Length: 440
Image (tube, rainbow, N blue to C red):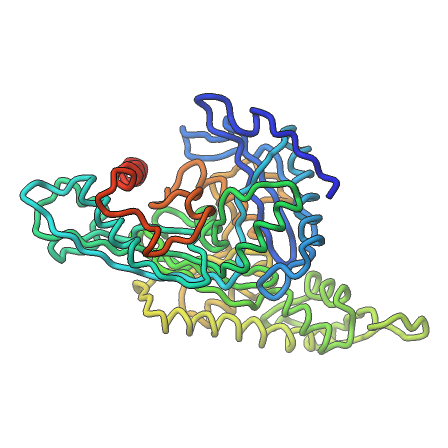
């Protein structure tokens, strides 16, 4: 790998300043990188300024995982180099947002007894420690550990139970994990690109932080990230992440369907999808004829000519099936949404004409297309739904939510019953107190 890294003090951040943050969006269709300098955090209006952005066509990622390390590392290196040139600053490590690795969420609960004193930080730390001790996820790597809600004597839905009195303190904790094999492959791939893995953020979580309004997170919302190789969803309510769901079906599967159904090349199918594709019927589509290159290299073969209506008959069933499967999985997970709670679509595949209307029909809820919020200075080429996840990583670094377990610990090893901190350990109390200061 030709990429060299200048590990200067600037990339680590000067004393008293936040470090440079680099977000790497690793998908099956594209690899994107956003870089934010310390001065890019605008606390006055809670916005960010992206210092540099770069993106290239993805390679070596397919079927929900990395299938070619060298190709993926090369694409990563090119995307980061472009962002570094635009930012005028090198980076040594990145926080990766992705949907690879069969990401899923798991809820654990804990309950601890309270004494005569009001609930304090030490009580919350004991509850977090007890919940962590229950996490048993063989062959999976936790990447997020977030409290959902607290309760005192059964009174649920508390955001901050401190200073309350009662006999018992309860905690619902959400753990988002990915396949350990995919995590290991990701780390090795970044090593080939001469980059450190500083954390992993589930794509729908990152996209949520960029695209959702505060009211949507509070009142209830589903953010669906429609990427090239996967379609994933994050369910929010009461200002907390409630559930993660992921399918290894995305926009590239629509392209493959077009290539097979119309006997054209993948490049020709992608062009047809981008320029003329739609998941809903449109006027005059029966009379409008489209041309696509034939498959193979026969110079005597003429172009493939099909009515535009045929393109819709290929696209619509795949998109509808994907949305219906996601809807059914969310129902089976028992994640209840309040009436009127809406959907927000992000990701490159969400830009296909008719997808929003089809999602309204499948979910029977209001649906809107999401774009990066609170990043007002993004160039037009990097401000669409496809770039929500990269912007979300930077917003998370600037404003949270902070995790109950540090990214460094999550990157270093699995959290299991054996290595979870003891509920009464001072280190856990200190860590939990830090989380409490930043989140409650």
